[in-house]
Every structure is written in structure tokens, then in C-alpha cells.
Image 1 (cartoon, rainbow, N blue to C red):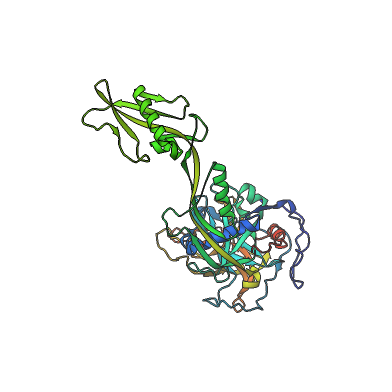
Image 2: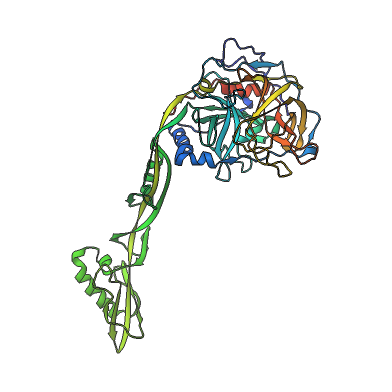
Length: 510
């Protein structure tokens, strides 16, 4: 599963003081890059989606539990080997103090949650962390927190990173993903040894104002009626693409265009029950239209269509007591006509064939977003370590959730947790992984995907070197409690993927 490829020097723009032992291979063709939000406008819409309805999508998101459980018998000895000399990229310095304070000073500000829409169409989250890069705009996480490996679609939708997230609060803003960088073997073959991703993110944003149009009606606001479905769809897209449009609950409803009778079979037309006024179309012709309808009904028992093929009648014999004449004096309500003929009574109902228009209704949340700057400038960024010796101690930071196999819920997923231990070599054939590293950990799988494994973590500065990301958990001693987390081994090819991402600029979305 390992290929030795020559790597170039360090990514341009990294700190000049970086101490990096450059691998001897080049990962060029081993890097896959996929867009998440291609344009500023798309990124605005993604950010507004999560902020909309008082951050309901953030609050209601559930931990991502896909492919987290690794069967114990598949975690075995063996594992990785360095493919070149060990190296590190230093963390972004913590020189600048942030106005926001962490609830636990020993926990890294760099770690947070990534939110996205899963293959089931529902909001979910994983763990991720900010990493050093030329433009302070990079996030590291598990590969399957970016790619939907269950439905095999390209990337997960509406991908954002929220450092320090807590119950709907976004202390440092929301950072919309721009481009995801993974190893080619993971992108194409879902190789568990390459289950990591580095994602460039746009500058963070926060809400500075919000207004819901159509909030006072169950149906929402009437945004207009349009001649064609394409015009209606264009209006919906215009509303959804508006710079400040955060979330929408819009629908297109076909409606009868009573002003335009058309010939039966006309594309986009409807044959519907109609009153005298509706069939007359022009108010001044109602008396004439009424007489025409009466005479037509009397001369055409049964179902019949008028000669111009735009309207017709259905005349049936009626039994019992019934007044002759129209059912109402109001032409807009005159829908049935009763008459006597040959000592029998008949009831006539009328229909017309009308053009169809399309009405756009619903609610639109307008959100004003403001720029809060680059990710790394706000929360810092961990360094990167690769080709390191197995057996060194690491801190693992993440948001574990879900239960142990015995049903015990040890973690809620609401707050950042940590575990500590020495890495060991592992393999897990069930997830196509022969070169993993493991650590003893009680983290449950859901939510902890993407947890940061930090080597040489400095508790006072809350910085270290990212040396792994959780891709699965296992109960290796069969006591119904998870006791092990596993991560890909970060080697020279990992550095190659990181390097491809670390030099890419993202920019602002507002």
C-alpha cells in the first residue's frame, strides 16, 4: 500500500524557521483535489445555511458514525514503517491573544467540529483541527469526514469547520471548506492507510443581522406567479443565490391561469371545473357566455366539447327535487345549471381548459455575514509531524459521542475531550489498512472521527504536531468497551498531500 515517490522542498510561505527533513519522494500524482464550495457565492450560501433559523442545523446535527467500528480481531500486530527521514512543520505561534476564551485552558483552540450534510440528507459532524499553512487556512481531519464512502458520491455537502463549537455557539466563526486534498489511493480506492484529508477554508464569517421574509404566514410570502416553470425556477434560484439569502423554504405550485383558455392538449394546460365567470374570461361577456352555456347544455346531453375545444359540459339526468336554473346568482359561483327537457330534469356541469402558471411561495431567511479573518490568525494552527518513530506518547483531542458496545454513553459529544497514550503499530484488514498506528483510548467512535493526534503537545501553549487522525475505534479485549483508537501512519506521502494543500490561498467570502 506504500509507494515511494520523490518529494520536493517545503511549501512556499511556511515559516522560515521551520525545521523540515524533506522526504525523498514527490507526491504529485498521488494527490487528489476536489472542490467543496467553488465560488464566494456558494460559500456564502453554505455559511448562511448553518447560521439560518438560529443555527438550527448546527444544533440538530448528529455525530457521524459511519465506518467507525473496527472489529477487534482485525486489529493486529504489524503496521507502518517510515518511507524516508522524519520531519516536522512547526505550529502557528500563539503570540496573539484572542478575545474569546477557552473553557479549558489546557485544551487546544485549534480543534473543533466539521459539519456537513451526509448521504442521508441530514446534518452531521466530525472532529477536525486547524493546521499550519502558508495562508493560515488549513484543516486536518479523517478522509471519510470529507468523502461520502457509503453512497460513493464525491464530497459531503455544505462542509464547514467551526473551532470551539459549543451548542450552537461559534466563538471564532464558521469557516467554509473550499478544496479537499486527499491521497489518490483514498479518493479512488478508499485505502484505509490514506484515510486523512487536508481542507483549505475561506476566511471565517459571523452573522451581523438576520431577517425572515414571509414569517407571518404558514405558506410564507407570495414571490410571484410566472408563465412557465422555467421562469418560476429562475426566481427560486435568484432568491437562493442572493448574497444575503441564508436559508429558504420555497416551493413552486402549478396554478390555473383563468385569463387564458387554451385548446385541449396544449402543453402545460389543465382541464378543470369552471364557473360562468371563469369561462367568460372577460367580465363584460358574462351574460352572453351564460346563454351560450345554457343552450349548449340543452342541445348536448352527456359529455361534450365545444367546437373550439377550449371548454365543454357534462349533462346527466337528475332525480328528486331540484330547482331549475343556476345554482347561484353570482357568476363566479355559477358552476351547475339544471333544466327540464322531455319531462326529465338534467344537471349540467362545465369545465374549461386553461393555461397553467407557476406560483412561488415560501419563507426566505436573509442573513448578513461579516468577515472575521483567517482561521490560523484566530485560533492558531498545529504543526505537522511525519515519519516519526512508533511508541511515542500522543494526546488525542476530539468530540467522542455515541455508546460503547455495552450501551454505556460515556461521552455526550458536546465538549472537547482528550486521551493520552503511546502509539503502537497496527493493521486492520477490514478497512483495507496495513500501516496503521493505534493508541489506547476510551473514545467512542461517533463524533471522534478526525480527532487530532498531537505529538509533543505543549500544554501551556496548547500546540504540538499533528501526527494522526482517528479513523476508527475498537474493543480489542472483548469487554464491550472501546479501548483503542486507530489512525493512518503519517509518512512522506502524507506530507506530500499536506504540502499540496498548505500553499493554496482561499480568500474571503464577504
